[in-house]
Amino acid sequence: MNDTPPRFSEPVDPPPAGTPWTVLRLLRWSTQYLEAKEIPGVRIDVEHLLAHALELRRLDLYLHFDRPLTEGELEVFKPLLLERAERRPLQYILGRAAFRELELVVDERVLIPRPETEELVEAVLSRTREWGREALEAVDIGTGSGAIALSLAQEGPFRRVTATDRSLDALQVARENAMRHGLEGRVRFLEGDLYEALPPEERVDVVVSNPPYVSRGEMRGLPPEIRLWEPHLALEAGEDGFTVLHRLVDGASGVLRPGGILALEIGSGQAQAIVERIRSREGWEAPVVLRDLSGRDRIILATRRRVEEAVGGSHGDTSGIERRTD
Image 1 (tube, rainbow, N blue to C red):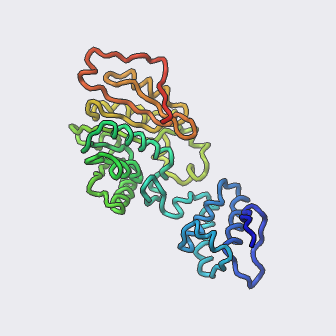
Image 2 (tube, one colour):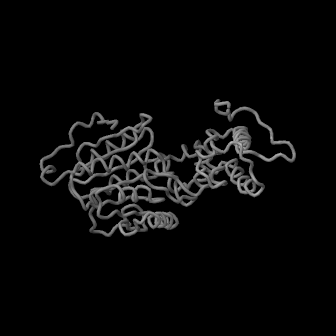
Image 3 (spheres, rainbow, N blue to C red):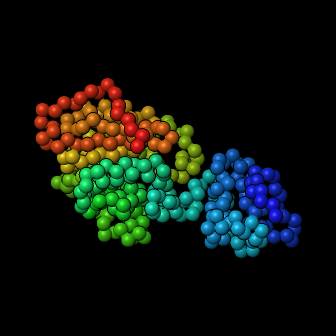
């Protein structure tokens, strides 16, 4: 028995006439087909697509390399492969995306949740657990698929999480995900633009958002999977990418309780400007910038001063940024 793992990059031809495709041959040929179209990272995508077509777990494919496929199974797989060849994202083809402890329904109505946003959720959970309090309230601005709001409701010390979005289509997806995970009783969904969705007198302990932060110029340089398929409403934020971030910072003090936190995901090169904007406003402690796993500034946490701390307080040193990697 040969224990050497197969090399998916080796050239492979279709089987001779009358000979069925096997799992291994189809995996190798399909990987070769997508690589010829200069689509990066396709091997895992092909495995996911074939596992989906065969109703198997992806890793189970490795136990069935010699299994022949029926014509019916090939007819299920072929259109999936062609969709990926058109640069449609894997998650949209499968109709689902993993996020922390959740499997979420996703389609072109919502942004595909990403690992960096998992880190944003972890930062909020870590900070709120330090408080040692229960029955907190949070609002997720621009919820999209509901990834942040549902994760906070499932994992955190929150009595209620409010999820807002100006897209009714996105809210429909988020509600579906809440129902799939039995969280519809703990997450409230509101339509509206940023803070305008909230009742005027409402106050919360956490404002969290993965907002649009891509500039118009950056949009043109994004991979086709993002630029052609994901909703621009959830990505693009004006000429410089700061339009929504600035509004989130400026409106947070009217929503947060004293001692509450503003948690924002940001893009590359945006940390300094957002930190300076927060520090220029009254009533904030010095913001903290967290780096993602690739070492990029990715998350800003800012705490609203308590009343007794704000009296006679100062903005402190504005010359630098406090950064943490944890």
